[in-house]
Image (cartoon, rainbow, N blue to C red; front, side, top):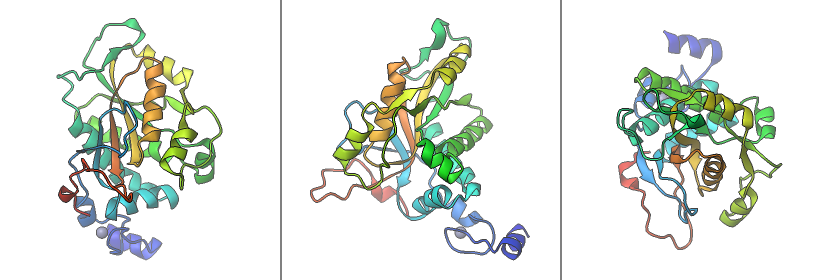
Length: 259
Ligand SMILES: [Zn+2]
């Protein structure tokens, strides 16, 4: 009924299979990957925390990310959030089993199970203004809601922001991206104070939609670690497969990823 109504009123179709109705039909939603796979960019920025993604940046995952980000299909934040929640929930041990790297904030001892702190990589303010939304923040909030339903204690903290005006990362080479990003992010004092006031032990995870060179994730990690928040992992929706002329051995088990 819902699909018929959506088709009639909005003429909407599933972005995966073009079935008239909701933006993502049940069948395509059920086909989304839900098992985190460890991944690593090649070459990998030095010191990058362990990275996990749900699959390769291709097929339905790529379509969802692009439609949400570029075509403002906000309804897709929920399924994308579910994918991210599956990655984060699957890559970290349960809260009763403290992960390495957790730190008590504000010098206080932990009063409860560690709090999972999800930090989305920041979008450029210009991009947020232009698109009328911060895609990664929206997806991360949806992921947090999913994780809470599963019993995890989660908080989304928009801790990291742009320090300088930067050019768009798209279309840049690996070296250009790295140079463009160096020391470009910083932790905003107000959300850091708000997080510290919680007085909780936190396990910090950086969340990104697509892991390409790892430069943005690494810079976000550096900004957090500069204020004493070690990053235990990078959780991504998808990872690109590098198509260089001389590819090195990949750690990505692509064969397990269905497009
Ligand atoms: Zn479909």
